[in-house]
Image (tube, rainbow, N blue to C red; front, side, top):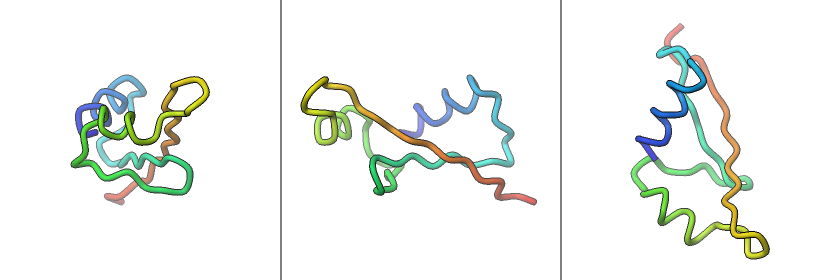
Length: 61
């Protein structure tokens, strides 16, 4: 998840002062889990996609 987060922050040009948080449904995803493991457990049973919601928060002022 860390590499995914960093790639997304760079692509979206998110400030280093902001943190990204990822959710599936109402569950906050831990950063120390591999994305493939999350996909295998949480993918949509009908279409096979993994739907992730993200939010950002300014943490350093």
